[in-house]
Amino acid sequence: MSDPGVLGSPAGWYRMRVRGQLTQRFAASFDGMQIEPGSDTTALTGPLRDQSHLMGILLAIDALGIELVSVATESGVR
Image (cartoon, rainbow, N blue to C red; front, side):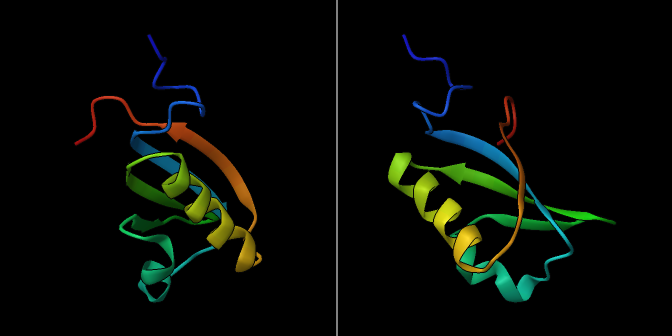
């Protein structure tokens, strides 16, 4: 049985936190993730279908030169 909190089993809801304040202008870059700006960081929250979807989001963060602060699964969020 796979642990949904392990990156090897990525299907499910995630919260990724990045440094800085992103606006909705970036929404298309993050394939369905909700953008929740905070004071110092922005949360990207939403469902990921599989490992390739996770990697696509991580590559988009990297391509935009944004610092990734954390990645966590969101249990109970739908």
